[in-house]
Amino acid sequence: MKERTPSLDLLARLRSGDRAALSRLMSRAESGAVEARPTLAEVYRLAGRAHVIGVTGVPGSGKSTLVGKLVEALRRDARVGIIAVDPSSPYSGGAILGDRIRMSAVSGDDNVFIRSMATRGATGGMARAALDVVDLMDVAKYDIVIIETVGVGQDEVEIARASHTTVVVSAPGLGDEIQAIKAGILEIADIHVVSKADRSDANRTIADLKGMLALAAHAGPRPDWLPPVIGTSSYTGQGIDELISQIRRHRSVVGRERAAAIAAFRLQKTAEALLMERLARNSAAAREMYAVELAERRRDPYDAASKLLTAIFGEERP
Amino acid sequence: MKERTPSLDLLARLRSGDRAALSRLMSRAESGAVEARPTLAEVYRLAGRAHVIGVTGVPGSGKSTLVGKLVEALRRDARVGIIAVDPSSPYSGGAILGDRIRMSAVSGDDNVFIRSMATRGATGGMARAALDVVDLMDVAKYDIVIIETVGVGQDEVEIARASHTTVVVSAPGLGDEIQAIKAGILEIADIHVVSKADRSDANRTIADLKGMLALAAHAGPRPDWLPPVIGTSSYTGQGIDELISQIRRHRSVVGRERAAAIAAFRLQKTAEALLMERLARNSAAAREMYAVELAERRRDPYDAASKLLTAIFGEERP
Image (cartoon, rainbow over all chains, first blue to last red; front, top):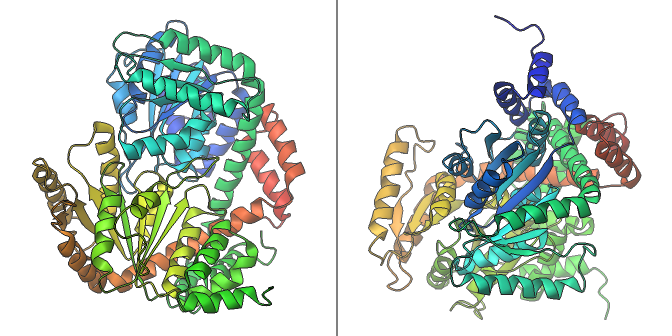
């Protein structure tokens, strides 16, 4: 049976919480297809109700386990959507984080929806696509949307930051290089979690974080919010309730201000995605010509790129 | 004493291999400053002689140690430049990989130059900046330029790919999540290295990689190059000479074709950087207005971004 007005129909189904409609619209959002935009635009206007929680941490930090436990607790009185942004192959895509959560106790629950997004899967910008997917979950009546990303790589870190509340997960006893990468993402935390708090070396990690925060507090960018440090354990359940109460507190303290920052970020990312899309248009011949001239060092990259932009956008160049 | 024509003078000094001139021009390239472009354009035309080797691998794979050993061997008959692209803080920058190499035996050698670049340090695109820095080393008479990146995150992986020869380093016995990330970068390898080959579980890692490659060979994208798998050990020195001879072989088999692909990549990245720069121009008022409308859900992101582009670029929009 053919649908006459598939998007409108899908939208109505989305608003009633229909999982199949949600899945289908998510795929469209990820594809970056121009035809999906009127629907996504409408979805955006309807959204804005859900609380978005970014959870990030280095590999091995125990993010996915924490997300599983968090969702188990949250779903007692809320519908929870999870977007797992997976580090993935440049060629084949991938779905790692999502699979881990899917294997946990929260899968199969009607009030929980898990979506994996491969880093490379999204045409026209990962951040743009992830935020569209957040809106879809929002409109499909998920009260809380969790975005989980591996805290390495600019896109991944940015996406985690574009949440109302950003949780950074640390674990005791990781390798040197991992620790060094970790240092790079600590600053984006609204809330610090130290996972595996049942381990004897966790107290050291907690103390280190608190020391760092005390130092930063003097010149801190958030006068009204000092990020708490919470030890959690997936074995004992320790810390999960405290984490949830801190997330709620953060929402009430910083919520409004953060929503404005997210809007500015989203404007930028969408503008970038539109520009990149326009850059990709109708330029195969010019692109090939300038690439050859570059390869032969007959032209420099700035000159070639500038000429390519003129070829694509005309003399009234952007 | 004031220099009258600082760039020309710097360029002359660069061409003679002057390290201070190289450092200064690298900083300019990283800053993305428009004034640096004429010099960088000239540098591009003079470059193209060095062989560029990308070395990437997941955290803990032993990349930096391998690069140290590789440089120790290569510097016997070549000048070697190293660019360590560091995973780094969104706010404060960072220099981890470079520091590790700097601590190794190759530091203090006049024929070796090590430069750390923080992922976030580069204005106008990491790839654009890294490739400009490659050219600078090239013109400063470094015969081989090694770009080391952590193999997580789209930018980092892309930069490693934009080399004449891409080496992916694996290590035995890493955690699950790391292994999963690893799977995402294996496909970009021209040469696989399994580090820590003195460990008993390294043979398993080597066998796994060979198995994967045998499967991929049937539908492989490189009919004239099957990526070799080389076990290396920084304790015994095993494999380093073989790695060097495979890098040379790869250069002779695939070199020309790869240079064309790198030129196309560079054209794209430079065009993107120029577009992003133009997007950032003179738009504070429009940007703020549309962000507010977005935050209040009075406008959707596509509409707002599209209007912002028109405000910046005019009706003849890109």
